[in-house]
Image 1 (tube, chains in turn blue, yellow):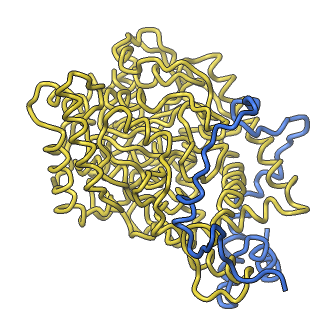
Image 2 (cartoon, each protein chain N blue to C red):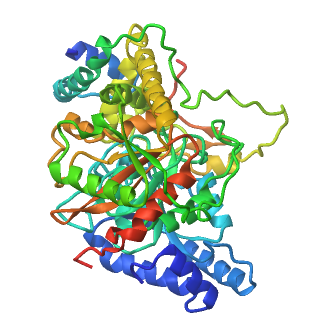
Image 3 (cartoon, helix red, strand yellow):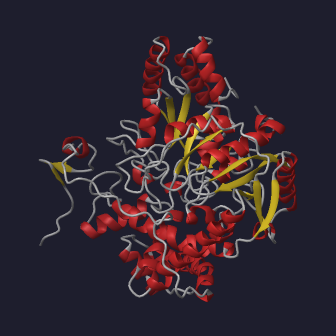
Length: 95
Length: 483
């Protein structure tokens, strides 16, 4: 499966990864070769085979709707790159 | 004190031959003196280790020691350790200090074990050689020109170098078993759901599993006793009783049915590795085991299935690294999108970015069914092959890798060449069954491992089988010539 540079830029945008102009070709090549590896799947007949999500086909365990977690905001905030008054600071979003 | 087992250390501590503080001090001094040769550690947590050692000595003196109390060990730098830097070998977490403890490392703290530090790995557990770490390549103590394997390369090298007697690793596609094979260790990937994933930096959530790495099956069993506990904080943790994995190590193997899948012995397998594997299998025949030829017809499909499922799940798991709340943030972001895109481009290494891109593509609109869902259907076919095989046999054996440890730098130019090395280990993670690697000899001075695979929750049997080989061979007792 060959990806072109426009594909790479579109995937990079979805993945929130900046890709410089001089890197696009490299990504196109390496990702295309991985997709070639993966294309072997397409020849396999999987009609009637259910997808396997959890290897044990386990069911999602539920718990009682009780509060068990403690508020650790200060500890979590202490390691933030930028914070103020209990808020994480990021570049302005709203114009 | 290199090359003493966990079992011997535990006994020596109880007998008062040495103290936990002495062991910890010796380990720390040894790592500082020699680890420049291997680069197996990212962080040495000296103050915390000595505090844990002192607490262990008190517990031993009070007669309240558990099996691992006072024994020095180390954790792969993928386990969140409260107050101790945890990096996933990535620039994006270079200075991340977790404000909480992973369940696995907490269980070892509760057991009184002493964590000396955090070991090196392929970044975010993505790799098979420990050449993809922000903190540098790890070298194999058996041959400094060789890779130690990956992604748990630092964990393997730390034990092989004699710094600690046991380490934790994680295995998503072979990342415990392959480095254990390359470094002459016993390493087990338990059944999916056997060991808690809470606090382990996630790579592929339906495949990841933590496990112990040590020199002997007995040591590995002692560590698994600590690790294999139900955890309500991991929604995929299975509520199973934990047997004493050391209690059945000496069970007889007479009548054990060992399956040898023909697909493990086809083209691409190095003849010396094949010979070592078959020599180990012959040892089991001498013990009264019966060899059964079996087939895993969909084995080859494990590579495309894994290299869709793992990158897809990774692309989702690694989306949390956005520079907003913790970890690296790029300088002077122009706007929010720039903050995300540059933080991640600058913070992640190339292999990680490749896999995120592949996964993002496979999950994107228009491709999700053709890639991710298709891979999940193939995953069920691979699982079914094992379920059918275990109707005929008790365990399955084969090589761990097609070749012995390869030279550093020999496969980094072509990621696909590296991926093909995983052919024997990937299907185990896809099926979720347990498997281990145990030493089976050397090829040109580089260790090779025997791969022993079992049915769901058969870890006790696997360790019993490995232990019995270790009673009639001495591969596992060898020391690297350079030590």
